[in-house]
Length: 124
Image (cartoon, rainbow, N blue to C red; front, side):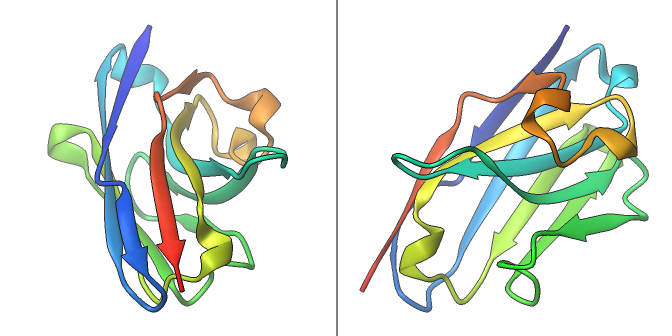
C-alpha cells in the first residue's frame, strides 16, 4: 500500500496563490507518477497536473497551464503544486494521486492511490 498525505489547502482571494504538498509513504516503488485531481460540488473529479517520479516530465490540464507549477523532491517522496493567479473556478477539493505508470495519470479510474483531499476556496 501507498499512503498519500496532503497539506496546504485554504482560502484565498482572486489572483492569490496557494501551495499544496503531498507526501508519499509505504510502498513508494509502486509510485511512478504523482499528481493532483480536483472535484467541485456537483462535478466529476478532473485531472489537474502530474509529474513523474524522476521529476523530469510534467503535464497540466489546459485550464491551469501557465498558472500552476508541479514539482517534487525525490529524496523525501514529496510533490508540490504551486497555484498562482487563482480564480473562483479553481475552487474545489484537491486530491493527491499516484499511479504505477505515466500513461495512467489522467483518468481517475486508473489511479492506484488517493490522498484524503484538501479544500481550496477562491473568493472574489
